[in-house]
Length: 446
Image 1: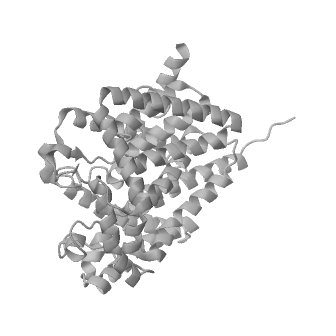
Image 2: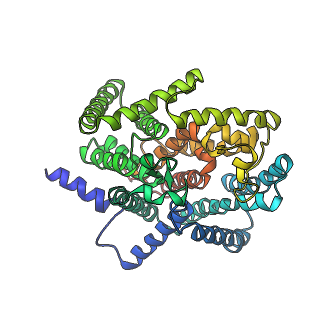
Image 3: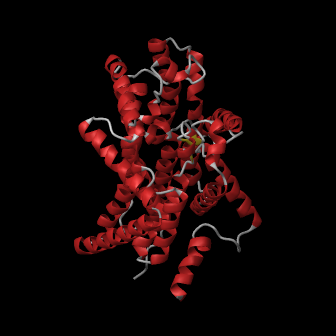
């Protein structure tokens, strides 16, 4: 019992959310970091009244890039690391090359295409992350605290919304806030779960390291109730595969089989209990998984309208991909000619199509350029020795792997590149700090 109380105190205090023994200036600084990450990740962009505030944030990001980051680098001799150069290339390509492609194929004015790329300004947060960690302007503990605070605070907000608000009353705010709006009975809040997913991965991997059940409990709460786990097929599978990968890497074969068996038993028990409580909900979710596999393997229509819609959208995208396979057709502004729906066809959303949607908009070259962020992450992971680990390093590795798996069906690493680039930059920064600590460590005197 005492050990479980200690784990609980670490979950809610020692590992990032310290409710006491933190100077007020440190609290304020961590709050500022949390605000920067919250806005840069576009967490509340779809919420009522937040669209214009998000636009202001993009402007601030571009101003920070032009009047803070570039002058700072100029004072240092304009020396850029390989990853910094890569992010700069992405900022240019996603803004200007994409706008040219949309003008070439659809006649969309260049100005509209440039405005679509305004979100690339948030990439500057990744650029700053590497530099402030390298020069130890920001402590890793502060970033860890900010991320965990955001995981628990968004968990509390989302849970409260689901319990107290009826999403059918907010259909008028559009699909960015309420999904299934075509049917009042099926309306659900569309809430970005990625900060919560980071927290769930943080505690799950820490539980695997320490073999303490309290951390599994925290991860389960965040995933099942905060991220509304099991409701989205790709998210659930990617999360499970991430945990199994690290479990396999950190355990011997026999231990892995035993631990995986325990996970399977717990998951089965939880599913049975959930089915007893709400059999219709579990049956509907199981049907969605079945329908997804049917569409992928057979290409035939199923009862799940979302799976059928993606099949139709893929067919609509293929002629455009065949016409411009290398650079794609560019990003289409919702403010011009009815957006992709008015240009390509009704109910066409390139962001729904995963890799196909990415190739439609940015082509094979664009897909490969965006995917280059993962080799950077892999190289940094390899550079850090296996004995060097911390909950934050493990969680960062785990979240980067999660985004790579999740991107296979959603294109997350492109449509939400500001998130993936930040965590890759964070991983690079952690690796460099660990290498620096080793170089400056005082050797033991025999």
